[in-house]
Each structure stands twice: as structure tokens, then as C-alpha cells.
Length: 548
View: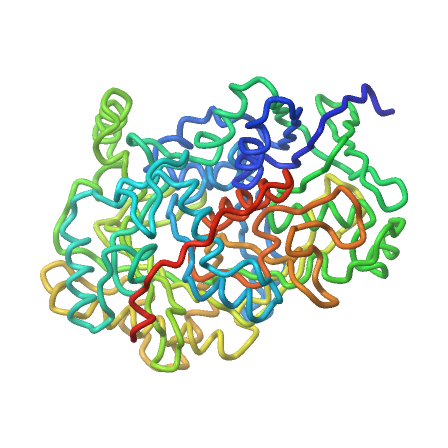
């Protein structure tokens, strides 16, 4: 039985990166009554807000959907864990906080290859700037007055300096700002951090929205179905405190559940590949074969080296040091706890044939050893190697029509042979970087994968046996033109009235970097579209690659 029915102007499903931005921008006019439904709890867990608590946060099953892929064919049939935030703030509350927009040419590809005339980087840049409060200061590339705190990595450790010098020595380059003039080279990375705390989408956007009084947030409210009459969406059904409820939307329902949950809910509601829906006994409302298809992610491998020198971060897990570090953070918002660990990295080309960077590094000045649920810190340093523009495609499908049963997902990592070739090249580039004289005083034995791994065949075997997700699931409700497209360039679901999808699932191709920043940009643009506002005036910034 469905209990009380309440009316709102807009219903947002999911209080993640996109949903929080939408709630804030749609709610600026207090005449709009907005409901935000989040399946997870409020973001009270302290480890969410301490930047160095990132590993505790993303591994916490209480604030995580705890997804697991099906057997990945090219990864020796391994099942890959797929953490997704099930908490207010979504994955922005459990991610590593790296703020990366992707390369400008990614968005120009959307325009040229997917028919998205209004999605060039020039048209997206004003929305990046609008949302951003960067400690680098405002200029043609950066915003300085937005809600989202963005800070340049500033934690002092000689290993970060060594990485930058190694970039110069290896010819892989150096950049002052990968989101600025030169989006290529080794650099100190930005993080969604403010005053020594994580600045999640919930902190930056949702909490100001809630303070206005016209936005209602329900946590632990699991949406089970989109309510549709004919081809018009009227609202949603959700389970809250053990009972089913219904809410009606006078204007629109907006799905912001992410690349896994948004297509899952569409299919449960009868929108998706008709044959697949029929197989699960779901009445077809709209045949959209692209729902759940086109799944993309950045695959990743980690190289780890023993460090000849010891630094405080290597010992921070010792009980007395952990206590001291925590106390310092609580009272001063300073010290080791303010670091998100992955403060340095880079964007590089895997080969001279690459048009623009197709490999990303995340560099941490400490090593990790996993033993079940326990993480031990090592006197070591690590470099993540991510393949940025995969050709391989996966899918999200139904396991059953039970809304509480997790969907099936297969990413098909490295299925395309060129993806594996780029990973091999990226692996070699990372080794080349660490082999520079800048690291001579720090570099000990290679711990992972180890010095015995040398031939291309051995490297390929290591990659296939160790590759994991970089937590960037996307593209399963792609926007654009064509048979497999799910939403149009305004993110309206094709053939359905009063329904949009606004999250990383609408990307037609994954961008070359972390996804939190572009997801918030997409949501900011969507809010103006929903309200019928003119889009912000395009900004034509200059970039180093334009003259190369």
C-alpha cells in the first residue's frame, strides 16, 4: 500500500554530486518546492570530512552501494569492486577529492562526434568557473567566488618535489595547473577541500539549499519506481521507514543516481531495451535500447616502490601518532589529516601518436598494504596509472525486477586491444618517470609489480591480473543523436515528458580525468535549462596545446 502523497515542483532522485547542485540552483527561487530523495544516510560520519580519511570512507559499507562487477573477461574473469557513495553527497563524500575537469578537447569531441552543438569547452567553461572557489585566484580559466572549495595540493613532502623534477627530466613535462593554460604534464593536483575539510557537493551546494527552507531532503528513502501515465511522468514511488510512499512532481522528476542507479531505475520503470524488460516481466513504457549501454570507466594499475627515507605520513597509523594527528585536525584543521594523499599527478601521452593526454597519474607519498578490511601504511610511495579514453564498452542490466536487488554490470575492461596497448605504454612511462635521477635518493626496490616484470607479455599479464576501477563509471544514459542515445542535449529522456537524467551517465564519452568536477558542471547547466534560463555566455580561454 502506498501511503501519503505529497506534491512538489521538482523531485530529484539522488543527493550526489549532480543532485546537490540541482537542489541548490533550482531552489534559489523560493517559490519552487523541491524534494530530494537519497537512499543513504546523512553525511555524519567524521571520516567523510577528514581529507586523509578517504580510505576509511570509500571502504565503509554503511555509506557505499558496495557494487561488484560480473566476471570481467579480459581481467581473468575477476569481479571488480565498484564503490559508489550511498550517502548525502554521493561519491563526492567518499572519493579521493581530486578536482579535474578533463581536457578541453574532450568536450569539443562531444560537440563534433555526438552532435552536441552546445557542449563545446567554451560553452562549459563558464559553468566550471561559476561553481568554483579556487585558491589559485580567478582568471580566464578559474573561478573564485563559487560554492565549491578547490585548493591546490600544498602538503610538503620531498617526494612531490621529486615527481615534478622527474617530469622535467623525463620529458613528460610540467604544468602549473592541469585545469588551466597547460593541461599536460606533471603537476600538483587540485582537491575539493576548504579550510582543511572535504568540500563535498553536499557541503558546497545542498546544505545552503536546505537552509532556504524550500528544499526537503529525505534520507534512507529508496526510490523504487518512476510513476508514468501514458508517456508523462507524474512522480515517484519510494520506500521510507519500511513503507511505500508516493510524491508527485508538478514540473519534472530528475534522476541523479549516477551511471549505475539511473539506468537501473529507468529499466525498473519500463524505460529501456524492450526485450530485456519483457524478459523480467516489466511492462514496456518506452523502448530505449541505449539505457544501461555504453558503460565506460578508467581502468587503473598501481606501481609501488619502497622509500629509502622515512616521513611522518609513513608512520601516521601508529596509535599515538594517529591520535595526535586527529586532535590537531579537530582543533586547528591543519596537519597530515588535511591531505587527501593523492596531491600530485599528471596527464601525459602514452605515445607520440596520441592527440592529447590519454594517461593519468595519481601519485601518493605513502604505500598501502591491504589485508581484508585492514589497511597498513608502508614506507613507500605509489603511482596510479589510468587509461583515460577507453574504446571498450560495457553495460548495466537488470538481475530482476526487484528494486532492492542490485543490477548486473560488466565494464569489459581492456576488451579492445588498443586499450591494453595504451595501458602497457602508460606503465612503461610511469617506470621511466620514477627511474629519473630526481628519485635516486628516495627510490628503493619496486614492490609492485616487482623488477622481474619486464617483457610486454609479463606487463600485460600483470595489468590483466591487477587492473581495477578508478571509480569513474559513466555514459549509460548518453546524450546526443542516434539510436542508442537516451537523452537529448537538454538531458530530457527521449519520448517521455517531464523526465530528465542529470549525472555522469549522460556523458556520451568519458572525459580524460576525474568525474566529480564535470558532473557538477553538467548539473549546473541542466538547472538553467530546467528553469528556462539562458546559458552563460561562452568563454574562449587560451591553451598551450593550441600552439603546439
